[in-house]
Length: 136
Image 1 (tube, rainbow, N blue to C red):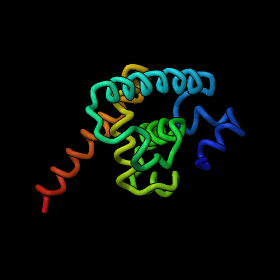
Image 2: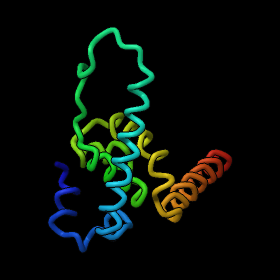
Image 3: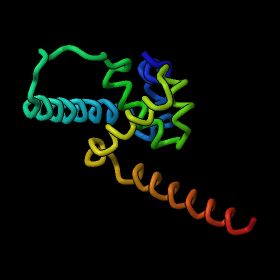
Image 4: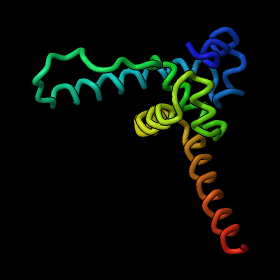
């Protein structure tokens, strides 16, 4: 279990500051997101043509709860995927893949304010890069 998830479970009063949602809202979000995740996985599984029996392949390193928390931490703090990987004990590319998997699933469940922060930050980064490149 990641240190962030264990801290949230031990100190639910810090949840708002860490991920932008209260503890009861987080629990509801996780429950709804897990249900969406299971439905998506069932749909993917039903569409597969299997040659080899299911159950093989690499197992995930993080639990579903940890993956959701990773996504919420990114949305709240806009940190790098390298730092997220370190915090959650995975590689930078795994943190990036995890975020990109969960973002579309959480889009309907999250308050729009969290998603707007990401859009604004991306626009600010693009404008600042454009400005910096033009001034040199």
